[in-house]
Length: 248
Length: 258
Image (cartoon, rainbow over all chains, first blue to last red; front, side, top):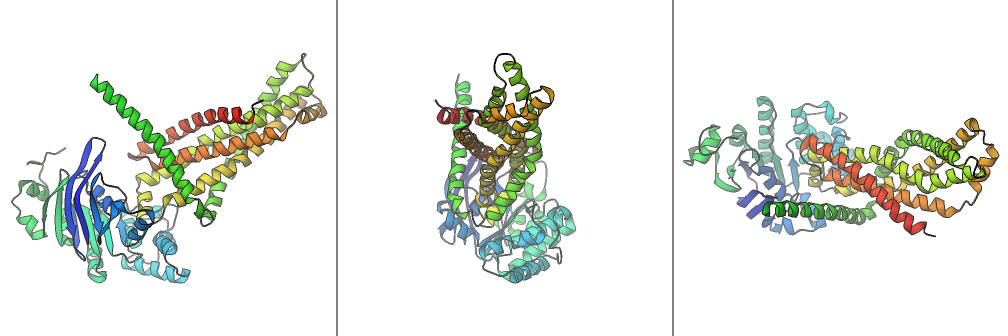
C-alpha cells in the first residue's frame, strides 16, 4: 500500500504540490488526472524516490521513501517498475539489453534465463523478436511497449505509468490501456498512472484522483467522477475551454 | 532596493548551490570508487572515447604549438644566446606548460562538451531517472567511468602532445632555420629534470578530473530540453577552461616553486 501524506514540493517560487494526501490500495489501478504541468509527474517521482519532498511523506508498505538511505532506496525500487512519458529507453543499448539490464544487475541468472525472460516480456507487450533492434529504429508506440516490458522485467509489485498514452495514435493508445489492464489482472500489480487522457483514465482506473492547484480535489471511481457536481472536475473531464479552470 | 537585494540573494543562492552541487558530485564519485572494477569495461570504453578519439585533434594542436614555440624562441634568441638554448626553451615550455594546458583546453572543448551533451540529453529524456528507477546508480554507470577515463587518459595525451610538439619544433628549426639537429637535441637534454615531467603530468591528471567533473555535473543538472542541453555544454567548456587556468596556477606555485 502506498500512502501520501501532506506532500509539499516547490521549485524556487513555484509551488507545485501543496499538501497532497492520497492512499493507493494494494492491487488497484489509481489514475491521477490533472492539467499539463500541474505536478502529476512530480508526484509520481516522489513515490519512487526520484525527488525528495519539501514537507510531508510518502510511505510504501510502511517505509518512508524520503527517509530511506541509498541502499534501502535501491531495495525499494526493485519492487517498482516505471514507464516514462518518453519511454526513456537507453539509446546506446539494444531493445533486449534495455529490458535485460535490471535482471542482469540484480538477479543471479545465467544469460539463457535472462534472454528467456526478455523474450517473454517482449511477447507480453506484443513485440516478439525485436531484441537486437536499437531504440532509434522503433516507432513511438513500440518504444512505449518496450518501456513497459522493461518496467515489468523484474516482476514488480508496483508499476508507475507517466502519461502512458501521450503521443500515441488512438489504436496504439487503446493497446497500451489493454496491456495495463491485463497486467493488473494477470499479475496483480498495483498501478498508478498519471494522465490527462480521460478515455485512458476511464478504461484503466479502479479509482481516479484529480490533482488541481497542488492538491487532490476529487477521489472516486470512474462512474463517480462522471457524476461529480464539481465544476472544476466537470470542465476538465469534458475538456471544455470555458469554466473555472483558466485556459493558458 | 528590495528587488535588487532579492536578485542578489538569488545569485548568491545559485552560486552556493553550484559549488555545493559540484562537491556533492565529487563525494558521490568517491563513494562509488569501490565499484570501479565492476564497471571496468565501461571505463575502458570511455578511455577509448576520451583518449584514443582525441589523438588526431591533440596531434594537430601539438604540431602547430611546437612549430610556433620553436620559431618564436629562435626569433628571441637569435644573435643573443647560443642556439643550444632553443631546444632547452622549447622542451621546458612544452613539458611544463604548453603540453598540459593546451591539450587540456582542446580536450575540454571536445570531450567536456560531448560528456555534457550526452548526459544532458539523457537527463532531459529521463534516461537517468529511468536508470534510478531500475535501482541502478547513474554515478556508477555514467560518471565514474568518465571520471576515471579522463584522469587516466589526459596524462597519456599530454605525453603524446609533448612528444609531437617537441619533435615538430625541432623539425621546423632544422628544416627552415638551419639549426643543427645535434644542437637542438643537446638543448633538450640541457638542465633536464624529471620534476618538470611529473609536474606536467600532475597538472594533466587534475585537468582530466576537472573536465570530466564539469561535463558530468552540467549534464546531470541540465534541464529545459535542447536549449538546456546547449546551455549545459557551453557552461562545461567555459567552466572547465577557467578552472584549468586557475588550477594551472595553483599546481605551478606548488610544484615549480624555487
